[in-house]
Length: 466
Image 1 (cartoon, rainbow, N blue to C red):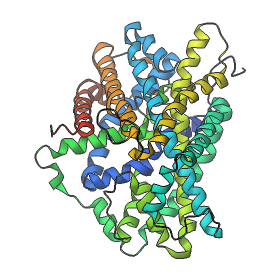
Image 2 (cartoon, rainbow, N blue to C red):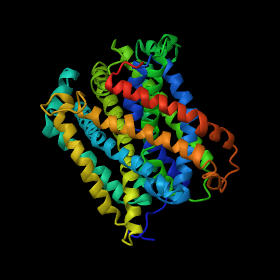
Image 3 (cartoon, rainbow, N blue to C red):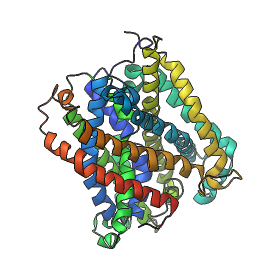
Image 4 (spheres, rainbow, N blue to C red):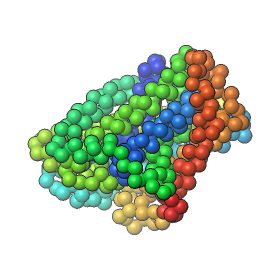
């Protein structure tokens, strides 16, 4: 049936998995994971991340996939289907991707700029980076707000076009093409990174236990960073997975899908660490450079590779671009799906292009604020004493809405409606993991989510709690 009249469906489970994994494999992996791992003490962060992926990632993934498929609706409709008094939690999930889009598209524009610049270096074009100091080049670019805005809008328009094409022709077709390419290119970059002189120090940093970070309450800071990273990376509590599963056939195994997505995401996160941290150590740089590691530190590494540098720089930033675009598409779909539901419920046609354009316009407003802010170097006023508007939008999404939504979901499905998703999961499997999921949703996940929420607030506002 015409997707102007309906929400659409995935043609295959593979298409669903590639879209869901694509939503997970974004800047959260290639940008966030390596630098947060560097700040979190390497292996200590990795260990905490894996524990959270098992006890929270899988259980929350099962819950969100079941909620979406059972209701056939986006986040607001999915929670309203449980009980109308719970639909507010759908609004929390629906607002998260809007705040994420507001800075994500600006960062996506940065990726396009660096892809173009490194490609220009291959041919010696005057728009390449050449021998310019990487920090100077980056600061010059972000302070040129007009150029940064153009690249951000290009990235946003690409997102809007793909989402407007629909589930099968847009989301699925892009994902089944882009995800295999992304994985192959990531492996190529990893091989080069781990074979650089001195790369072994970076590998040792990643996998050697460093328990000092757990002294006192230091483990809570690592927990908060790993938890925020997990939700940002897996697209949990952002409406994306609920929307995607609402397009999934009833015969597909939700337990298996909920296992594959976090596994694939964690594997890519590890590969992202291997693609970046050994290279950073090889160049004699620090892995605790924060977000600048993606555009300053790594560009310094590529420029130090000689003639091969532009080739690997082009491959790497094309990889980052694909990852960013796949996640941006998922974020927009999380919001678009919900508002398409509301149009259909009102007796109107779905009109996906119209809804997508409106959501894109809202995201564009925040995106323009981020580009004008130039990472805090402009005269724009900031909220909460933050140095950049990225921090502000990230606070609302990753710091507040996502952990709050997840906590409320665990209370609803762990305590208030503990058997609500069982029949949906049992349509396609025997639900062997029910005891584990039930314990996680009832006891473990709520406690972890409270710690993550408090830790996130402590991190954003430097409260000194931990």
